[in-house]
Image 1 (cartoon, rainbow, N blue to C red):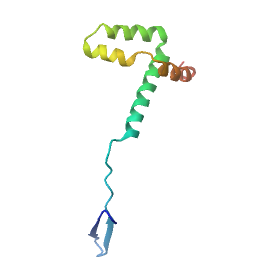
Image 2 (cartoon, one colour):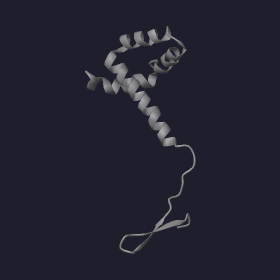
Image 3 (cartoon, rainbow, N blue to C red):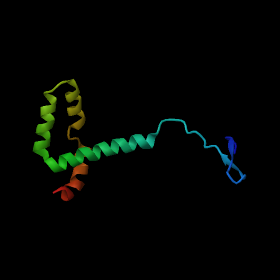
Image 4 (cartoon, one colour):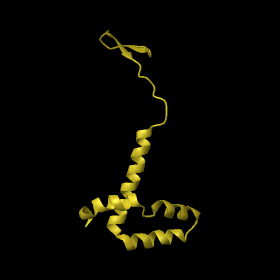
Length: 94
């Protein structure tokens, strides 16, 4: 109860005391790691389902586009982590 408390009276007249939750501060590192891991799994799913050649052709098409598409092509390039994860996913995709 060091963070304070709230009191409420219920309909039957009973006073209920509940502690206030402590506010967490800082950046949610677990959320960021989950987002990055999800992105790599998404890339690996795309890589495994399209195949190496088709995936690289589509990334090459993105490189010919506008600046935002070029940024997307840099993010979507098949890196070792994507290929590693795709190796595990590949038997399940087909």
